[in-house]
Image (cartoon, rainbow, N blue to C red):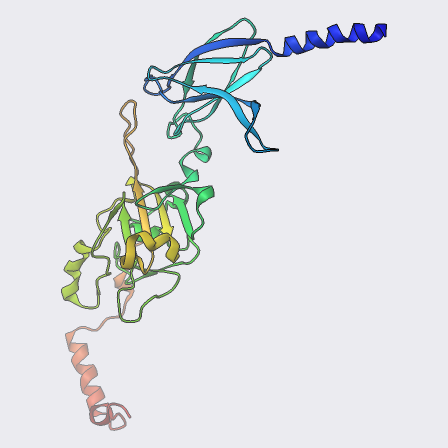
Length: 323
């Protein structure tokens, strides 16, 4: 009986200690612009408050947290034994703040996910840009492939279509001619039409481009059509990444124009900071053909050769075309 009277005060002391709380305050701002962030959430990831509901056997659990006001300030009452809180906001990298004994005020800075301070592997690579919308990679269910220009950059290639050759599964790039800078024929998952247009739809920064048919260079009158090709004047160094939309689910937002697939290009944007100039140059050295080693005929020798062939009776190429 004495043991029971001794245990009850100890249990009451522990319950009272567990219910002790303290209040923390703070302010959250942007690490790049120093502007306050309104609506940022501050919560304890490992603790929640459970309450009974009107339905039997169902308990509602709510996390302990709050959000910042229009001035970026927040006030949160937390258990005294809390070690850390998590601060997050859409478009910013989540941050874990350690709670120290005796400190009640915290100034917190969040870094944008498109900032240079965030590694590229955790940055825009996880976002797929389809032209009209941006989708997280883990939420994308259609056949989409994204490549970074740093991964496919090639020396001596002046056009975007040639950069895609052999880089993406399901995309076939075939040069039309051997002329430098001539456009290539691109087919995404094979040829979709025998008589209609076969070239994919090009989209640059959300703007669909017209005139995707590759000019026929076998006709000299079509050479001038090169200027009408969609990406004829696009510098590969101005491209951030390229997204290929392959199946019907990915290309549905563009309608019938995307029957042959979509190539969405995102160009580079200006960034905050000092002026930075990028310069690159390619140099090629080839040997000039030595035409002096060729045994060519002069005018007199050419006439003699023709007369010799004409006097031969065993050659019938003039009468029956060599048959």
